[in-house]
Structures are given as structure tokens and as C-alpha cells.
Image (cartoon, rainbow, N blue to C red; front, side):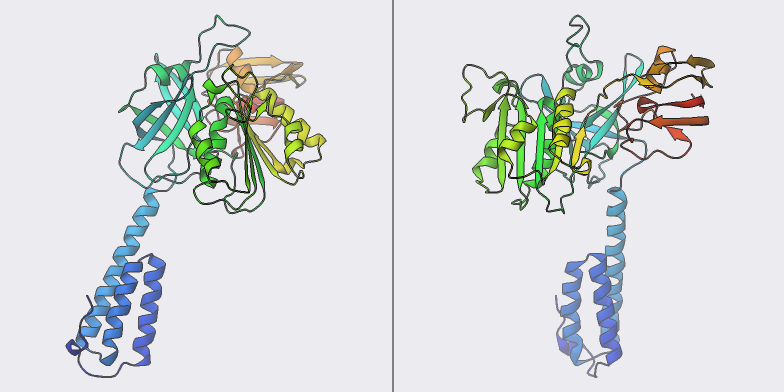
Length: 427
């Protein structure tokens, strides 16, 4: 409430007082206190007819308000900063999606919000104990950033096609069968380099297939928070309608009739009830040939997540089309295990007391360690989560492709590197 001018001692306001007022208002703005600024202006306008003890008291009160606002802002910033190590989250909701898929909504167990914002496309790393075994897995965030909840969407991983008698995925099955609302999970902060910059204006091609659509879904939801200005082509590959995880979202996006948004649902094996131009737009897989059919040029940034063959085909096709590597982005949580020539090397796993004489070719240091019974914690197995980070005591390693996270000097990610000569690891 503005105090009447009559409450102030009659006297003139000096230029020093006005400068003090402007300086005070500037501090309020920097502190994020818009309401305090309004109060400040009202009080000081009323004080323009006089100055004295009451005026000085009001300034002192205002300064106290500024300090309070700054302190609140500092605490908010600290609570929303990415955390180190694991933080406990409660499963607030568990929701069934299409097919063998569940979404899990996670709220901080300590109640401290807002949560750190993540970049659309990033993932969370989960640390679990299953049957007295430590397991680490990464799952993409499948929503736009929210202050109070994270969401991940997890498909039960089936047995490998070449070994149908094998059990389904251990961790995904654990989430489906054992994790319920109210359970507490240990989670590392969002990370990952497969992201879009929402401040850019460059046109985008986003494509996802199967459960691989989850990071792309986060990108699309973030872009759709406001009417998008960017030119967006979105391709979604599924087998048939029963696998459509985002039918409601697609219907809502299409209802906006945005001239710069182009959506294509691609079905490789439609059901009899599936109708072209109704439940799907293209019969077949998501390919670069399809891009070339729709896009006016190749001057786009391309983001793809899905099965390995799909991503490999799209990357190779975009290269043939003349798209620079810097504009091609893809994500895979299961790295293709290709034999790479490494020559002769001696690998010493110091803590485990095991030494391996290596010659010829191999896939990764992690695979070598596991074959020798050396336990190295792992998660994504594609250089993205840092779970397997190991200190190098001597020697050097090489990466066939750069890791997706920063690796400090003197350390390595065994899941995506191989020895460059003799090597001693602290594991």
C-alpha cells in the first residue's frame, strides 16, 4: 500500500536521493523481484514531496526486501542445479502405453523443486539393485521440461531375434514387473549430447522408430509448447497401429494446422484395419528416399533415433545426398559391436589382478574385461552415461567415434574404446 505524502516530512528530494532510488530499483530487477519493484516505485513517488526519517525507513525496508528476494533466488538456483551422483526419486505415476510399454513419472524424494531443466533429447541414468546385482541403465526423457516431474517411457526388451529362448531384458522387465507407484529410485542427473537448441531457427527433420521415438518426442513436445516458427518434418516409424505410442499427440499437433509442421506416420506392416491417409501416411520404413520425396532441399538438421539398421541407413543416405556430418545427429543406447583391429597389446586390470594378452581385433575394452570376468559397471554401452568411466594408470586408448560426454584426462570409457598399445587400468 502506498503511504500518503502527508506522512513524510516536507522537504526537497536531492539528486543523490534519486540516484539512490534508481540504484535500488536496478537491484530489485536483478534480484528478480518485479513485485518489489512496483512497491518501490509507488512508495518513492509518494516520497517525492519530501524526505526524512520515514523516507529513509522505507528505503531500509526496501533493501531488506531485496536481500530476501536475492536469497530466495539463490536457494531456487541451488535447488534446480544438476546434482552429482545419484538422487532419490519417487515414482509418482506409472502409466500403461501402447504395446509392452510403460511411462514412469518421477518426483524428487526430497521435495526440492524446481527440478533442473534438461535439453530435449537427453536421458536419465538409473542405478538399481536386482537380485543382489548392481545394474545401470539409461532411458530417454520423453516429455518437455517440467518443474516438478521427469518422465521416462520404457519398453520391455524382448529376447534377441537370433535367440528367442533367451529371457527378456533384465532391467526393462524389472521396471514393468517390480517398480510400482511410490517406489524410490536412484537417478543420476539428465545428460546426453543428442539434443536440439530451442533458440535456433534452422529447419529440422526429426525421425524416430519404435521406442526410439522417446527422445524425439521430447524434442517435439518442447517445440510445440508454443506455436513453432521452425520448419519441422516429423517421421514416426512403427509396425502397425497397435505400436503407436503417440497417437493422441500426433492428432493434437495436426489439429493446429500449422503450415510449417509436416507429420508422416510410416507403417512397415499395417493391420487390415489400418487405412492409408487415416491411421498412417506411408507404407514402409523411414528412409532418406522418403525425405528426398518430401523435403524442398537437404538444408536441414537431421535427428534420428531408432533401431541400428535404420540409423545406419539414414546416416549413409544423408551422406550420399551431400548433407554435412555436422548436420546429422543420431542416438543409440546399444552400440553396434564391430570388430576393430587393435594389434598386439597387454592389458592389465590392476585391482582384479588379471592380465590379458590381446592380438588381432576386438570390440571394446568393456567386452574384453567381461570376457575375463572383470566387473566394470556399465549402462548405455555407447559412451553416453559415464557409468563405466575408469582411471588409466598407464598407456593410452583410442575411440573409433568420440564419446558423447566429457572424459577427463587420465580416464576412459571402456564401453567405446580400445587399447593403443600396452595398458594398465585401475579396475
